[in-house]
Amino acid sequence: MARNRKMDKQGGTNPVNRDVNAANRAIMAIQLRAKKMTYEEIAGRCGYANASSCRKAILREMQRVVVDNVDELRREEAEGLDRLESKCWERLEAGGDYDKAMLFAVDRIVQIKERRAKLMGLDQTQASAMASARVVIREIPKDYLGDVVVSTEQEQAK
Image (cartoon, rainbow, N blue to C red; front, side, top):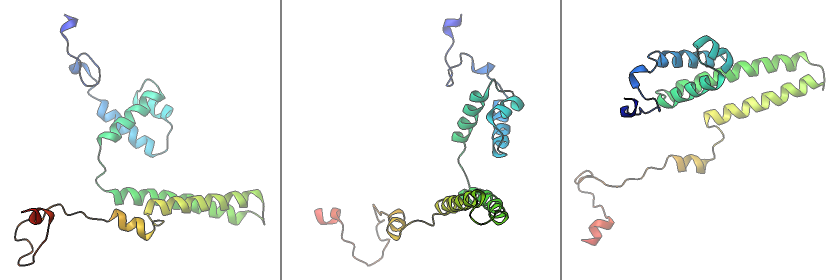
């Protein structure tokens, strides 16, 4: 009887017996991870066996979801960097001249600024920006350009 069972996509033998709440748990786990909770804490709250299974579920769910609004994601990430930078500035201003706390704060501020520039695409050279904006036209519909004569390899071959 067990020999006749078909394997489902996730390696289970009976897709009917899969956890119907798996998607809800994964969504909850992603929300908790966004709040910077550890995988162990999330596993305990969401009912995963351990931190590893929790991490795998989160990654699997994130691969399934296509980000609809990249700008929104960038904005949220930039807000987080702003908060971190603000705390570093507070530490810098609280420190004395050339003490370790001041040097640490300066180092963190520079790294946060580098990350923000990378996130926002501010460090692109003009050449790399032009390369990423290149458009290749493979075919122009007949009469699209009106009376303009278009010379293509195909027309030259005729």
